[in-house]
Image (cartoon, rainbow over all chains, first blue to last red; front, side, top):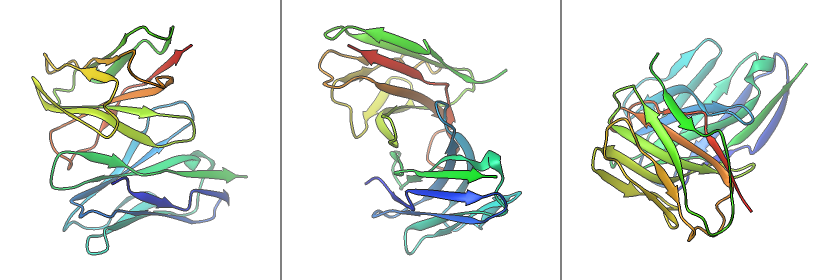
Length: 109
Length: 113
């Protein structure tokens, strides 16, 4: 039931773009995206709801394909501060919530 | 300031001892969650609670117990039955349901030897 993320890891140079994918085997009502720095707690980035619009702020945006039960996170013109591990989180119609397998993103100068 | 706190930050225990991790929030959130994270791994749900005096098991509840006697508090007990308890434990809270972001505490790193 844990959503699968791809790629597992990616290394970017500053200014490059990246896409992180999240795929679930269950019908989804919501998709959350979080970023975690090493040794710290995850920090919320955005949430997408079924029937909702593509969300974004600054140079990070996301989409949610309800039929395919997938979401993608788009990072454009990456900055050093974008480094960390990105997790999607998925909720169905019930109350249980699952975090994805994680994608390690490293931005180098 | 509203937030969610966990204590202690680091905890060391001997095998065979039960240990209780604290989680308190003053965000007036109905829902609270406990996750376990192992090195290089994702977050796995241990228990969650959507309302006071009610909680449900997550994927890896065996060897753990919780209580939710107050809205603000959701302590997690790691019992001696948990085979491999050394991990990073994260508590989170949110408004009820999956449509709301989860706010995380700073985590407790538990080491059992």
